[in-house]
Image 1 (cartoon, one colour):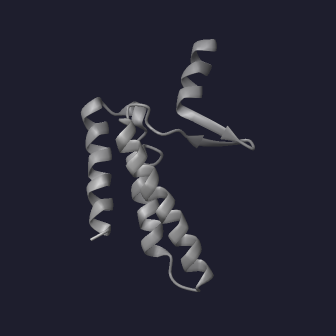
Image 2 (cartoon, helix red, strand yellow):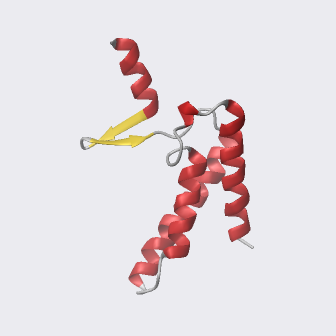
Amino acid sequence: MAEERDVDDERWLVVDGRRWRRQDPALPPEVAERLLSHLGRGRSGVRSAKKAGEDPAQSRHRVDLAKHGLGERGTAWWEQDPAARRRRWEGALDELDQLDG
């Protein structure tokens, strides 16, 4: 039972009774930093668009791509082999970087 809890603690974060998937622990620090930067910019863009009465779809797309890259959305990172995990974060970063021009 304790072993199962340790695995759950690695996979899930519980905040106010709601369970959130943790980011992939295999992410290299520089990759996680880049994805988190995109995530923050996307979230900020969503807030700004809403305040301005604009469509936040582009910013939401950035958030979604970043969360997929982090392993927080899509196929659970613990169900992927190392090569699939790498493809996931590299693909997300490629798409995110293309959004910047």
